[in-house]
Image (cartoon, rainbow, N blue to C red; front, top):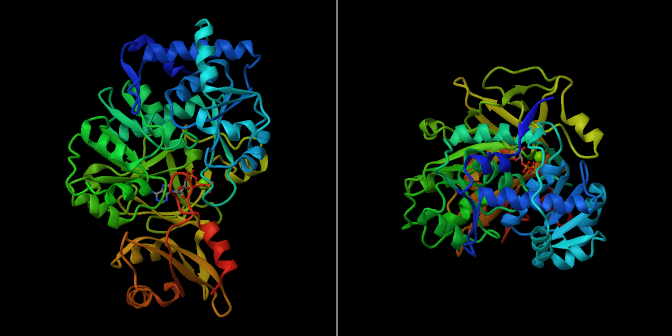
Length: 497
Ligand code: ATP
Ligand code: MG
């Protein structure tokens, strides 16, 4: 059996007095020794409640350092933490907690009403504090089986119903090596944790790798642009890890043109297509944004652009990182040569063993020889740099020709006044399917749909030109700001013209 070690326990021995966490709003700090001691105390309390190996503990809260204490407490017992999406109302969360069959739900004050409606034994964060204070700090085994289920994360739900992706201690270490070497993470680094903790980024980009490398984490209760802008300037963040929607929010901030970003030494972005126009906006502020690609299923880090080639290979997500192996295959899972687009498949120690309680989804997600089918189309160039073309599910066929919406979006982004766009395939009597472009204008601006259509005709093959153009005020989005195209598609079928 492969083992890895309890990160909190090991850090408490190596660097006990170093500050692991600071809460941005309150200034409250937690050293590595305190993190581990509090996690041990809570693990003892959980044990006293009859919670042990394999049991599920759900949590519904905004970002707080307690979340990580609880994550480590569960790890010490072999229990499984299930972070819930606080953007979902109780009726949507009920089937999730039923699927997880949690024995306890921990919640903060902000989510008390929803927690109440979920028919589970509850523990508020105030009650959590009492439990920690009342318990003794027992010792727990610090050797954890690498493939044990530590926690599970529901996927972003960009393409439909989220599935719970199993996350293991082994995946956490593999991801830390992948992201750590990609951005040269050291104990001198501080990251800003501002994305919701029910998605992979908050745990696996902003936090666990930083703890493994002995750095510090600033925890923001939830995303708000002003404290993020402050942290990017005052030294509270040396390595910034974001998603396109956050980069866009920063670019729209009133101080963007004058802000002093010199204390941030590394800027990376992933999780959704990153418009080249946004990379260019940041380049004008001398900020080099490196695009990367990952999935909840892959820990998440797979690709990250290296700084030396970020300009020359703009649009690429870089090369696969050291503990990830990838291939691009045809419809029969046969590897394709460079410059051919096909499905991206991934394997390595950062990849999940599967989906919780969902054998059929797990089975169809992997090839017979263990490669994860990403559902994404990618292409590799002759120098080994990869480009994410689009999601297979989003591709459509117009008059017999394949159209990758992302390719059309890249063109539309260059049209004056466009802030954001999303293209979907919609039914059409003549062509089978045609494109519909949803366009969000820049704040206070407008986009002339007719002029945009002319521009698309000039810059795209005829079958790629969106037949429908709709100017909208905002997109349906996931918590990480990803555009939910399946919702756009159902909206289109409700109001086709
Ligand atoms: P669901 O699986 O529930 O539909 P999701 O796929 O959005 O949601 P995540 O695991 O958060 O859930 O996202 C991973 C996906 O995000 C990838 O499979 C890919 O489609 C997309 N993605 C990630 N990084 C990039 C990138 N740099 N460029 C384009 N797409 C990206
Ligand atoms: Mg997915």
